[in-house]
Length: 433
Ligand SMILES: Cc1ncc(COP(=O)(O)O)c(C=O)c1O
Image: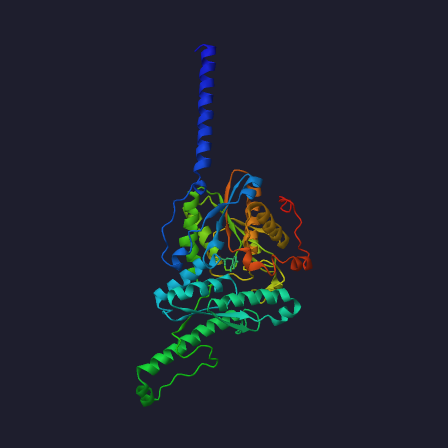
């Protein structure tokens, strides 16, 4: 082929290749699953059907700043206001299926956090009641009124939802009267009362005849008409992990069309991180999954070095110091069954100031009013973007809204007192490592 003809062919081929690349890029950016318009939804059948199927939001500010697609699952839009609605639903359904809980029974949890609120929200939809045991942090309340107001608000929400709230003194998790252990005991007591009642109804004469009586429970919190109790046990109950493995993970996969490179979240019980990471990595082992860990938590060390504590902080002995971090619901100093199901490629640490700065950045730039753990998750998403570089798709979770965090995380005086007043104009507070 003579030279001018060959040059013309090469030029034509180059134009063809370039224009196909351009068309593909245009097609992809318009047809990325999270950019497609959704059809109008048909009516939902009751509250329970409104849980899940939350939007996956492209966070424009973070995506534009990092050159990555940063997507966040808007779990704060669940009816109970957090990602824990899924867990509450799964825990109750499994317990009803197994017969450990009956309709009319009491779901019992030891926590004043989002899980308790979600349990209290969904329990009536199953014809059940909810009882919550929380630590009565009087010593802490004396130190700062913020904690008091925060706990009071949570208790008020729980009681408004129809749950009963029991306050116990704060002790280590190894103590029998730790609020989680009290909650476990209450479930046994409620079940005992129910079986006592059944026996009484069965045949009072029978009882008199053979002299058989049940020992009365020492601390009767429940009325004699109770139908039994079930300890939700969000930390160790694998229904928590399962909710995210069967539900949140598949939704993320579907909403991204499987086009994602990384997932990151902080862990409280570890259920979200474990369920989603395991599901995504089974779908595609190349999806990298990471933990973002707040101050005071041992999980970063566990993931990166295999040990949670120094020798002096033997497992179970350490009382998590409530002043370690201002983020709520995340960070823990023991390994839970749920966390152990996670499939992780690494971990990052986040600071309180980064979380506070991130929350204000999201509010200013995207109108997203999110809670402290969601802000920490977004800190993590940017960290992953900085590590992987532009062109990657990173997913995280917006666990709850800022509404639950008015007395601390969104209280300027509280932040001034802790030296955490936000001052950043952009994302300069997240200097690449
Ligand atoms: C507000 C909030 N965010 C995040 C988490 C952490 O989620 P997980 O328990 O699935 O690790 C929790 C846990 O209670 C929470 O309450």
